[in-house]
Length: 255
Image 1 (spheres, rainbow, N blue to C red):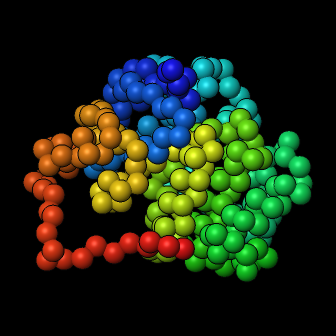
Image 2 (image 1 turned 120 degrees about the vertical axis):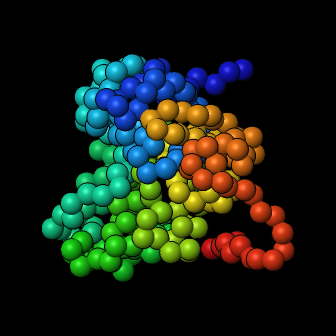
């Protein structure tokens, strides 16, 4: 039985930054966009989020993206951009704006508390956002987008768009983010995110889209797509996979 795509892209073009890109996203996928700065990753995410004008067709949950109003889109997708202006308000007030309107208060409180616990934000809830470090502000913003479309609170929320979400996160915080993404996907959601860490992408992504100069070079599972030849082509430098015992790779195994 074929799964109905959550997201369908048909010949998406954005000015000179993105050219005739066609792809689809099904439930439970974690897709990483990989390529040089300026390759079209942020442009693609912004177009899917409904922020940038584009030509071609985008369908979200079987409906043309152009038919959604902005307040409707917020029910179906959450958008995490690279940077936003810092609001003057406490953390709890900022997160409160991301609660789905239809969710029972006690249930949304429970999910919010759990997100804050995992992202280590509980002690910061009464703090002014302007007093936070870069990593703390990044985690607050991540908590907000997860809260917005967490399946227990918002059954319509199926797509999470993340533009370089690991910026300013340490190794433990990145592991927490990985865990939340996996949990969201296991509940039927899909994640489309930009990445600059090839090792992380190879380990975490279910699918990879390699972008070069605004075009999709190739897509598929990491083992098939992330070859020396493909990576060397998109990054315009010789890249090879090293597999030996002369160095160590570190990761968080248990939280």
